[in-house]
Amino acid sequence: MKVSNRYRHLCHRLGPACLPLLGLTAWHVSAQAFELPNAGALIRQNADTTRGIEGESAVERAPALQPSTPAETAPAEGEFTFVVNAFAFDGALSAAEQQRVDAFLAPWRGRSVTLAQLHALRDELTTVLYNGGDTLVRVTLPPQTVTAGVVRFGIERGHVESVAVENGSKVSTPRLKAILATTSEATPTLREIERNMRVVEGVPGVGSVSSTLATGTEAGGTIVGVDVTPADRYYASATIDNSGSRQAGWRRVGVSGGVNNLLGLGDQLQASVNFTPRFMQTSSGEEGRTRLGRLSYDMLTGLGASRAGIAYSHVDYRLGEEFSGLGTGSADVASVYGSSPLIRTANASLDLGASMEAWFTSDERLDNILESRQRNYVASMRADGNYYGQWGGRRNATQYSFVTSYGTTTQKEYDYTTANPVYVDRRSNFLKIEPTATFIQALTSTTQATLSVHGQWASRSLNGSQQLGLGGPTAVRAYDQNTASVDDGVIASVGVSQFIPPLPGVALQVFYDEAHGRIRNDGAMTGASVRLQGYGVGASYTGKRVSAQISYAMRAGSAPEHAARQQTWVTLTAAI
Image (cartoon, rainbow, N blue to C red; front, side):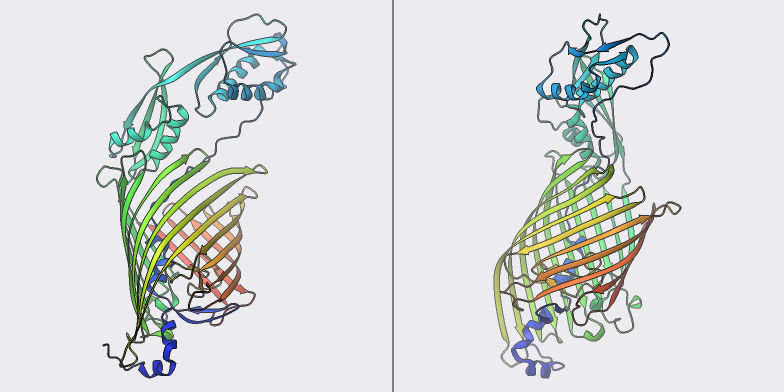
């Protein structure tokens, strides 16, 4: 039996109310919320400590195909012209090819053209039939006599004879060749090779990938040369921010880094550490402390471009400020994860992934008079993607993810305030769905608007490690990390950024955030709900080796008790 007298008299007065203190200080229906940090919540608030492999995506968009329009320039003096009424092809076209060609040639029918214009049209038709790499085809304009205005084009088809890899990186050449050879047919198309090149660019240890075409040894054969350059082997960065928990050290220093292609297998070793130096905290909060760390290793599996990895995360904390001496805790998370690229084009990407996580958390309150120990086993499947397009002649980008998780939670709580300790043992299963989407639209050449939405739905009440936090720098910025966490909720943010051309890399922002959430009826605080609103301004700088962000946000609408009227968030990151 544990012996501690410092807070025993308080718990005697509270009686059974002590146990809910393990998670929340108070919850009041209709937006009155405040919570103490716990080990699981601190892991959740630092997504980098549990994140697995995320997909890389291309940022360039292929130009949209537009109907051709004959040039209206007058023919040169003495240049022969004639009227074109129809077009014919010597080679057979597929139904899809015929449809593209008919749409492309429609503006040319019934017009007077010159021979130079027909030569230019021949080259454009080659691009139309190429269709981003579907087929190797060349359109020719053979010598002919134009009769009744019918122009005849020739079709010469080819095939990819082989793919030659010039590997300047230290990634295993057989592994790169296996990725580049991934195809749905016996012979890869140029489109498939280009898709596979984008996948190769995402392999740790690979810098850039480019291609060339050369005449093969077979009739109509083409050899595709793929040149692979190396990436930096080592990388690291340092970060200073105030994104920690105010009660457990909110001013933080972080160091992260990794090694690319450690074993020559397209593998990657990564590590990150965050801590809260005492001298950086306020005088009232210098007793608060948080230490976080993550170590991960992943590699190509040998099955195409799929990857698999393992990771371990740890956090421990001690409460400070008005809660100094009232609580400590720790959490450990072990995980295995994998991902596979499904789509890679010039304007879209999609990755599928899965993970298994084991969470072990421990929290002590009131000098170890109250204890809570939890185990979570969570299996997740996710889809992450990007899409780049245009709207009103301006570029836009959409980033999205969808995560489904199923887990089991075992919670043991101990109350040592009496001679006969109180022991509570709970076990539950849960299903959780988390959709996220961000849309960025260019308004002018220097202005862009952003809309982001993050939601969560759970089948039952969750513990702190699985709940959705509604406050903080990645949620409603007018509130701190511990304002409120919920089982079901949605966070929406809208903002406008203005880039400053005379100051490259500098942007100013205005934004509005809003969140709604609730605790499930089977939770400790039945039926509690909360709504948070805030607005503010910010500035950012992105340079080659340094980036910085600052935002100032103020509350809007009704506010929970104990919440500050405004929050300022600062992040400074430098590559080492």
